[in-house]
Image 1: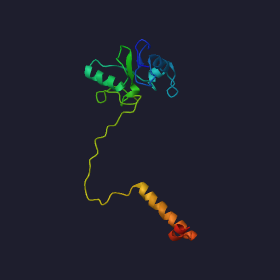
Image 2: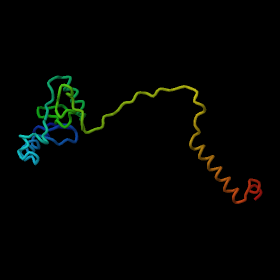
Image 3: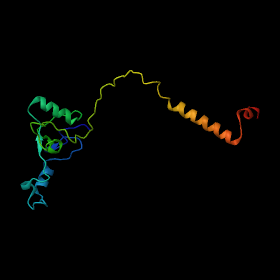
Image 4: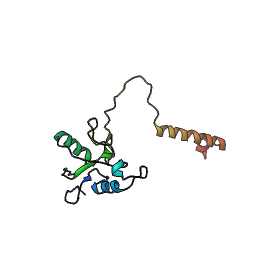
Length: 155
């Protein structure tokens, strides 16, 4: 189903497969941290942030491209959570979401270079090699049974 701003409510992470939203963030913040025995909003354990789409048109276009959703246009409630950033949040060094984007990034390989040199004859094709092995095995079996080519032709 294509993304529609009318079917979603509140601030939510727009990355495919990510269900983080403002309601989950509030529930986590209200829960008690087992390690520090205080609310998670005070210690910050397991908390994620929801980052707004940027005002800079070039970075905004890059974010939208990385989200990779059909017919997607960011709204005022569209966010990308901190789980998708290398540093755990948007930084100057890593301003683009790069992790867990809901799809595998396609690796484009360059064309293979054709190498021409004297390496000898090309390798024997597998089918030809298998056929010759089969014929050798058949000859050996016939030899063990005492049948030669001449006797086969006469019978």
